Amino acid sequence: MKQNQRPTMKDVAEQARVSVSTVSYVLNNNGQVSAERRARVLNAVRALDYIPNESARSLKRQSASTIGLVVPDLMNEFFSRLARGVVQAAAMHDMLVVLCSAENSEEAEFGNARLLRSRRVDGVIYESGFHESPRSLLELQSLGPVVLVDERIPGLDLPAVVADGRRGSRDVAAHVIKLGHRRIACIAGPTTHWTAEQRLSGYREGLALGGIDPDEMSVLVGDYEMNSGYELARVFLDVPEPQRPTAVLCANDLMAIGALEYCRANAIDVPGDVSIVGFDDIPTVQLLTPRLTTVRQPAHEMGMRAAELLISMVQGRENPDLLRPHPVELVVRESTSKPK
Image (cartoon, rainbow, N blue to C red):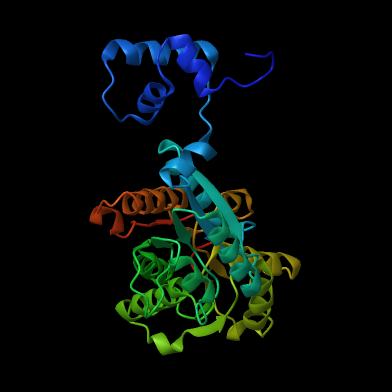
């Protein structure tokens, strides 16, 4: 073997004094190989520091050992944590992840679907921001199994790994009502998102259970981005104090951060003048002043479970336990208190 040249399967075979096919049987864990020959092959692999050519092995198996992951926005810490969970679970199965971010663009999302199709991935984990015309999803379904994460899409019967967001938002409503709030407003997520619909329904259910007419809650729709939280907080709070809500429930942490920033810029005390609640519990919210009360979603665990589910489907196995909704947790911090 020439210096600085990567060892080949032939080099391993020569070192172990076996045929190339025997080396292949050992590395792919198939075929009948005696324990003595298997040990010689593995010793040669270690001695030569041999790394299999995964591309060649994939062609032979007609499998890329690769899964795709589509998320709408990696700037949102929830999605980056979810992606880390997918990558970690895939690595445990010696699989690679092709990560695509649509950056909140439907055309980019469709382009990502074409890219994944060209890579011939074994399956795809999908979290979209555009549900009214899921062309990209239809494109991806031609590749193999598709697992949704943190969403469901009406009319499409696809397995989904989700959290119990409805329960979480009910807990939020119960929390602010227990504190004594009655003038409650909501910055909801996009109406096309299943998660946003679930959270808004949970807020309304929580109000009803607390003896407040849900129709009395003022609702404005944001886009899950920080700027929309800022601007919609302006709509709710740039009014005479007797007309202001005393609590604002935000459907994700980024919009809650925007609302906190509006309050800071306009000398509105949180939680003295208004309590603010988020949803997701991204790491940043613990660095804010005041620290944000929110609902903790297990993003990393959801990513791992989605990957485990997809890999089991690729391998022809069923695992219905992976479809159970993840529990969530209300995390009470300093951004909520009794109203004045």
